[in-house]
Image (cartoon, rainbow, N blue to C red; front, side, top):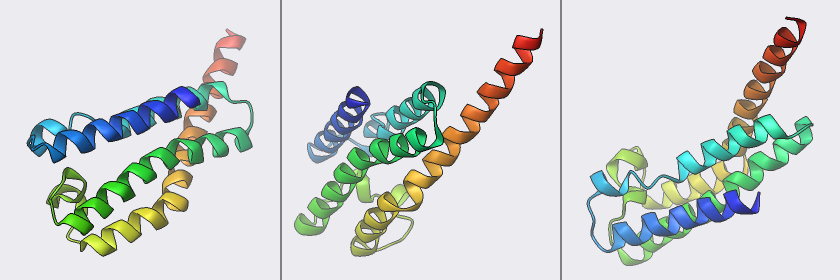
Length: 136
């Protein structure tokens, strides 16, 4: 888990630094925390034994994302300097205040729960396939 947390946090810092130094969003978008989170979700969906462990993993995978996202949005809010974190592609027309508070609330509620649901689906499909192949 520590490696995934470090990977998500590290990718977020890289993404933030690249946008602050002025690289275009069309380049910065390829430095994705979501990809690292998805890889972590797949890994923990397949390696954890209980629903509770998957729920914990979902929250731990979202926490570094939320920290970076809220910090980057706070930076944009405080300085007025546009970053990829509040670009039109990601802000959905919300103000910087609404966007920041939305990520803070979402990071503690629906975002980890959605990730948990994804992990549960992957786990269930994996368990079903394992049973089918075991019978063969």
